[in-house]
Length: 284
Image (tube, rainbow, N blue to C red):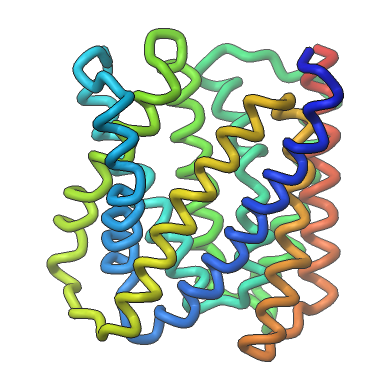
């Protein structure tokens, strides 16, 4: 148990990271009509790597990692998850797409049960099933309000959960610094390979936004890493849900989008399901 006095600074760091994530979504929506998501993902990785490269060179022993091939596979999954989310942020309402990302803990719990042998009791399973009900409330399949682009956000959340399951198996033999460094180093070349078939040369203004996005992404990662070193993940995780009202506000200000009641109702069910599943998980 970490000291309670460190929880306050940790919360502030998470809230700052949440704000950066909201700005990231706005930048993607602004760029999405002119710059393909694969190209956005490449430049995000490139500029993010440029920000942290001095730290990698100075502090990280890359050769000591026992998972070089797995690092590349994980980076490929990360790149795929970003592209899926960028497609959703570009074409779907931002608040709905953001609410879909909250399903990652649901998929993570199921993945840990299926592949890592973690136990799921009946109450926890009921909470997870309620989370899928929340997904259906937002998606409205078969109805006039169904937006297929939201399936991309759901795919991004699923891929993120797969990455986290892989990370749980890697943390026992590798350090957090090497995990972060290898991920950034592998994502840039993989991103370039994926971007070439869709290549569009950004304008100077677009390139500036892409650079800003890369910096925000690197800073977001730093803030989250530091916050989790100060307080428990279970304590900090619920603060990420504040990303939804922030993104909804930014979407209204910049794009005149108004989140419908179904978005808030479905997101509320998903959030409640995640909180209950996590609380039950700590007791089992």
